[in-house]
Figure 1: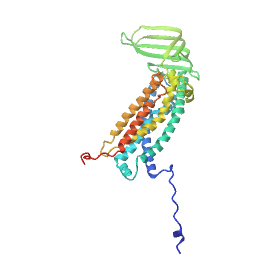
Figure 2: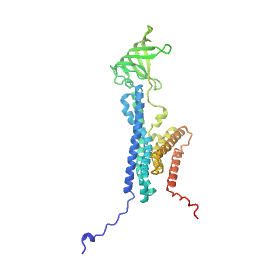
Figure 3: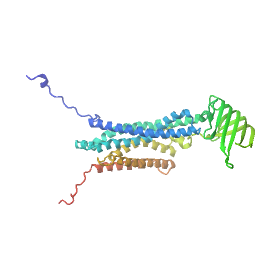
Figure 4: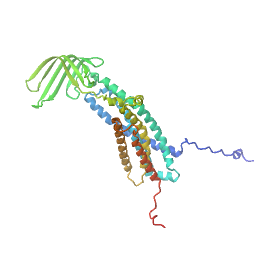
Length: 391
């Protein structure tokens, strides 16, 4: 009699699930995710560096309050994901699959039965979640970040604190040679007492330095009728001006003297306000060309992830002897052409030069056609040399 372990029949094999990840799928997904994260971090650092330099320059000129620096960096970063993630997807796929081709791993996988469908499956499993996340960012989070940034800057520029003024402390004049002092300031930064301003500028005729000293007992900040120009209204004060090294000084007493501050850095034009509108407002605005064009632009971010991921698949194919970054330069050139096409289409839609029915599909479809042609031509076997002369 056989032992029980030998009498047991082997379990019936289970049918493979369509959603079950194979070992090769998990391996390719890890490669894609690692390359995508590396590309995203590098692009994010470049973008944040440029944003910090721009914001610091505006802070030095008194156009942005210093305490909003990190908040604006975060809001700008969120809005820049619409551009960064499609490019990071292109670079991530190119680097991941390109390494497999250069190290001959892809040749081994193909000889083991990995066909084009097996290469596209992990790519789809990677690109679809990225496109979904970017869709949420593009349609909801990024516009909300733009509206919040505009609101913060509008509120901050109604206060003297934006120019770096602090009660009881001498500070440099933003964008000019000189200092300014405020004795007291209201909590909202719109009114002050005991102000002292000293500025210097070169004289155009003699080349000597002219000095200008202004004092005021009190005053307030106000905006021009257009809402852009900012002025300090100085009341009940004195003004002394003249050239250094000479006895030619002039003393004036005034009841009110207005001084213009640097313009605020807010972009509250009609076009900017429309482009920062919520997605619901864009869907309801069927007659506004700018808002309809913005809707196509927001749809373009998640679609670009899928288009560029598919385009990067044939571009990543290379031989081990090929230069390491040759395909990378070609991919960046393709992205520049693609992205500029999107920008051009957005401008044409906003200006009414292109029908809304076309949208930005005239950019996506040629890119998909090129990707399909490259994939098809890459799968064909090359004709052996001398085959034409064989009878």
